[in-house]
Amino acid sequence: MMDYLNEEKEDTVNLTINKEERAFTNVLFYRFIEKSNKVEDVSALHYAQSVEILFCENVTGQATIGTKVFNLRGKELFFIAPNVIHSTTYFSKKDSRVYVFQLSLEHLKPLFDVEQCFRASNKSLYNIREYIPECYDEVFQIISKEICEKKSIIEKVGGVAHLFSCLESKLTDAPTEKTGKTDKIIQQIIAWTEKHFTETFTIDHVAEKMFLSKYYFCHYFKKYTGKTYIDYVHELRISRAILMMRQGCFLTECCFACGFNDLSYFTRVFKKMTGYTPSRYRKEFLT
Image (cartoon, rainbow, N blue to C red):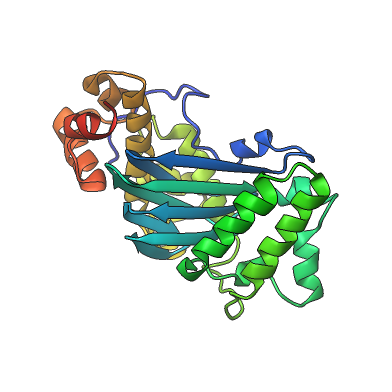
């Protein structure tokens, strides 16, 4: 049986699938976010309609894209195609940077149809390799100088064209079912869990909601995400707990509001996921 959960309060944490899409317009079709120095993040499995390019410098942790798990160390660059499930867990105390570039192909489409350009060449965004650290400097330069710093929309679109011309050189063979778009059943499971993870439920209950047997549900989820459903629920809860800790909430409040009914169990799960106890984590990263 899963741990006790409290009723979810909407809009208190950005865990859901496509909330970032609301920030895009046809003029501002991208976002470039920087985190530096005390970098920490636990982001549970999710997916989005936008392209995401993740730059990591001097952080430790893991990035999961589809079913592939990558250990973070030096300078890392990841490409995440639209609607591909992914999660990240990373930490560093100093001299570290994380950049996230998000590009909405939907809002860019009236100006430049990236997917159509790939289709015209019998190629796909889902053929681009997820892990391309050798392109870190070149891709960063294109995004920062040719897209973000340009004032003209025409110049920005030209920068996007240059970006995908660079990425096109990093194609793999045809994508498999595990590396392409997120499976519809997995999308339904993620959507349901994000809505209900602060309630009391069992795996049997969720499987029944998905019209699957418990065995098939567990097998299916592990096959398409590379992790167990319980680990995924723990990611959601710990991610929420860290957000509440950033807001100054007491640890006991974080524990019970995030779905745990036992403080010692919360502490064990938190340490297993982050490498720190909640109190140590707060001291190292949030003060």
